[in-house]
Amino acid sequence: DAGGDPGYIRRGVPNLTFDSLASSSAGNAYLVQDGESRLLLECGLPYRRLQQLMGFSTADLAGCLVTHEHKDHSRCFGDLLKNGVRVCASTGTVQALDSSILTCLPVDGADKSYLPFIVGSYDVQPFPVFHDAQEPVGYLVRSRVDGDKLAFATDTVNLRYRFPGVNILAVECNHAYDILDRCTRLPEKVRHRITNSHMELSRLCGWLSSLDLSQCRELYLLHLSDSCSNEGRFVDEVERCVPKHVRVTACPKQKEVG
Image (cartoon, rainbow, N blue to C red):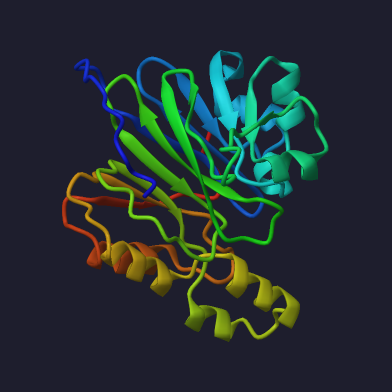
């Protein structure tokens, strides 16, 4: 269970927010804020572009959480480190990126399961996901300011957690089988990789239908495929399998600046 609650004291301040800066195979970066500190999820953009999207305010980040080593998720981790930002990733991801100054996620010595840790005003619980990377993870992020919870999982073919009490879901919705079938020019190797390492629409809807989303207010669809997705359709189908109070948003390829 990735959603146990160790107990939080609400302070009557603004709720947790999630902002997509970039979301595609060209680059991924997302900003989490709770009124006390700012946390970056993924850094898969050139550093200068990331700075532009964040209003040139990367220095005040509490940290950055990286899910895996692929460049569209980790591209500028070195620049963040040089500028004093703590960057955290799984041991497998750290080894794949070959950087001794990245912070490895804490694990239990007995069963190697991930342990919770603190970044800024957030409690973070990593969890394993299913992707063609060395040790990919997702993150359950809880604000110590008001107890709000965000579950973040991108680049995964499936999910097996329930995240009870989650307030914001940000999950991959990469492609649909029927659209993929019509992409006849895709090499078979690429087609195989898509279907075996990325979340498909109907699979996501099936998982969402099994959740208790009574406390969820926002659902973000991440990492839509350029050729094998349809934003309007994906939002419509996901809206039909979640409660009406949940606002569903497909994250754009990149946020507009100015």
